Amino acid sequence: MLRDHQELDVTVVAVAPVGAKVEVDGAEGVFGFIDQVKHPSWWDADIAPPRAGDRLHVCVLDATREPFPRLSALQADIAAARRLRGDT
Image (tube, rainbow, N blue to C red; front, top):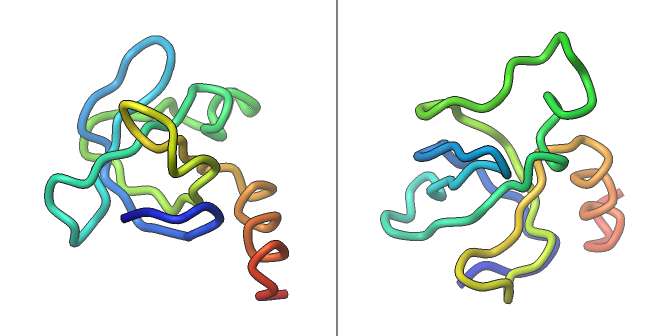
């Protein structure tokens, strides 16, 4: 269902030391995973780490990754996805 470089709005549903499981907004039962290094809090101490209920804008890095597609909430990755899609 998800495609590489696609942009999505998601809600964090669970957090682990290695990252956050998210559900795609408006697509019940469609999940993804944001590795801790793909969340802005990893790079900026002034940004809070993800918590259940947080809403994020992300891009799909690897739609084929199992058990959940790999996503990123980093602005640089979102900008790269737009370039790859030809949106800029």
